[in-house]
Image 1: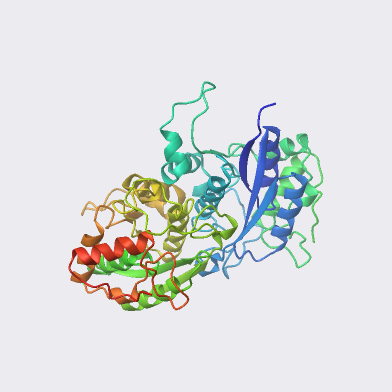
Image 2: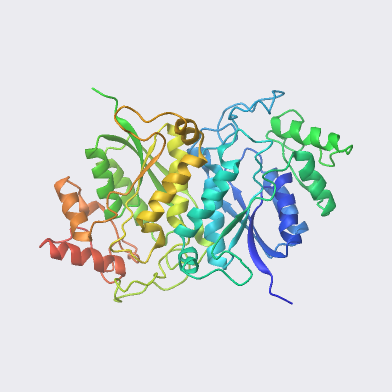
Length: 238
Length: 238
């Protein structure tokens, strides 16, 4: 039996990263989960990440504290109101955009991967529902992969080696398996892989008990997607 | 009089970032300094960063706490001994290399820059004395600049605009003005610009009073460079 490849999964507690982790597991990766506690207004996201990490049977779950409130510039980390009941598909960059968020998160995942001798990073970025976020586009993911192989000891040293007989590229790879899927397609894939969606939390503005608001962009997308599949969302709502 | 351009300076408290800040000031940038408290074993680096920030008259100094000890893999953040009195110019990647450090730091600088409407990032990376660090090479700096313009709202929106009549590239720029200088050249440039080197700290392994060891790679480089200029290093040694 071949050794399992190690991967680092960025795990938020939301639906997308849970499905991404299930896909990585199905592809034979032994996962290290990384969650970033970045001054989210709701700690329930991290509690959800812990539950999802357990359900994915990851070998290690690291939580890095990083207070992005000092940076500001986003409704998710600063005192800007989260918009309710507006059309999330209108294409503009939403106020919930956190400056350079996926660059920061992937950089931390890269550092952890190099330290743990993993070469595969997994992120639940999605270009369909979040077309307004520049760091959820395939061009960004490809750009980060190129940078990873310039930035690290492992990337530079392995970049000198020829490709393996199986055609594997040497060095780091960034996997964003949901990038081109719609939300219903993501949920369907997760259901096929046995993801327990009752553990996941997507709301931008939950109550103190961790129940979703049902009205922010993220809740609207999620509820519509479950409805499109003729399913009830098992996560708790207010 | 033209408005001053805003820049974000990664400021460590060491010699290189102090000179980088002085160069940015001389080039007419209004600076926001960013220091990362990343589980360094010595807090005196941050105290030095505060003193240097004051001497550079920055408009704002932000300190972001980021505990990289959870990542490990470096003598600077984990329990690996800092090497003493070995030849720092031997070309191998040293154990003081922190996985993905400059990628992580530039990502945070990018987030702060976008939130503060700055487009210029300054980093004291140097390829001559730190040839063993992959993230101190010009290819890495150019790669991060490309990524910055894929990763952000500002980079993507301004990337659509034509270049200005003055030939300025739109979007983000990453400046590493020390990248090709030797340590004596860096110190000479700093002396020309009035940098107070007594405020800076470079040692990997200082004592509790913040005095340098005089024997680690960083101390050796610094002491040799001052000696080459026929100067005494004004920083305190044990």
